Structures are given as structure tokens and as C-alpha cells.
Length: 235
Image 1 (cartoon, rainbow, N blue to C red):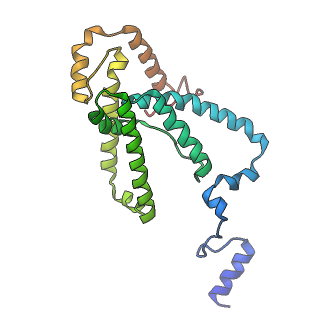
Image 2: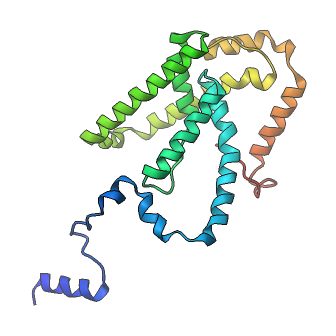
Image 3: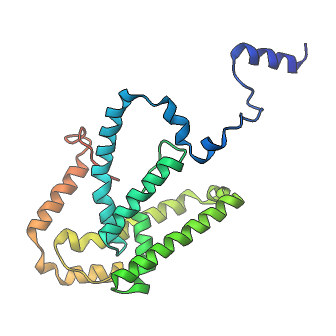
């Protein structure tokens, strides 16, 4: 008995396909709309848990999306659109069960850095430029998918990624200092924002500082006293 016969026999006995064979071709409807493959196996007993999960995620994601829109210099309504429409689209067209959909801090900071210098204080122009930027990014992603450029991410070193994340964190923190202290800041760049906050430090709104301090304390202590509550934190 040769090696191929032994492999075939073990395959038949175990009921598993060979890892060297191509996977069975999926129907076109399952490739285009992956959720169509899961719907026939969906059972009503999981509906309650799914609804609870949906409400929990919505309670966290909706205010976060509105805040991220403000970080980008856009109307809070734009943040809702950026959260709801992609979530619905990915539910129908997406294939991963674990994926974050919607705006997030680093992307909001990058959008603001690109849009605000061009649009100035005009909110409508900011929204138009942000929408155009989103379409351009979608085109770049589509081209990257067609030519299979995902391998480039393997060459980004860990130090570069950590430096980028820390830089974004500093920009976000500086951008929220005025709101945390109850000050009206009109500066757009982080150094100017720090200088403006330092100049207006005597006009701090202490009730605003108290609310912000309580929220920060809740985030920092979530692992102990608040471990059972749905708290979103990146600490």
C-alpha cells in the first residue's frame, strides 16, 4: 500500500477532507450575501440574547459615534450615519462574526486633520469633504483588494504601530481638554489647544470637571467595582 492509499484510507475513516484539497465551492448567493448561509440555521431561542447584545452595543456605540464625529469636526448626526449605515451593510455583506463597525478615535482624528484645514469653520463644507474622503478611501481599498495588497501590512513593525497609536492618543486627549474642563476652545492644532487651555484655566467649569472626573474614575475602576456593567474603555 502506497502513501496515497494510506492517506485516502485515513481520510475516509476520519470523515475529514484533506488539507491539500481545495475547499468545496460555495454557492454564489452565499459568497455575495454570507448572512444567507446562516439564516436557515438561526433559531428563535437565541433571539433574546441577540437583542440584549444589540441594545448593549447600541448604548455604547451611539454616543461614541457622535463624539467621534465632533472630534473630526463634523456634526454629531454624521457620526450616527457613519455607525448605522455601515453596520446594516456589513450585516448583509460581511463574513466575519467578530468585527468592529463604525467610527473610532484614530480615524476621526485623521479625518479632522485632513478636512478642517480645507473647510475652515463651514460645517456643510466639512461634511462634503468628509464624504468625498470616505469615497476615495473606499476606492483605494477596492483597488487594494483587487490587486491583493494585504501582504504590505506584514512589513509594518510593531514600534511603528505603537508610536502611531500613542500619537493618536495624545491628539485625542489634547482635543478633549477644553470639553473636559468646560472651556470653549477654537484652536485646531494640539499645541495651540494646549496654549489656549492654559490661558483660560481660570474659567474652568467645576461641575463639568466633576462629571468628567466621575466618568474617568468609572473607566479606571471598571475591572473591580464596575466589572459587571457594560463599560467601554481602552485603558
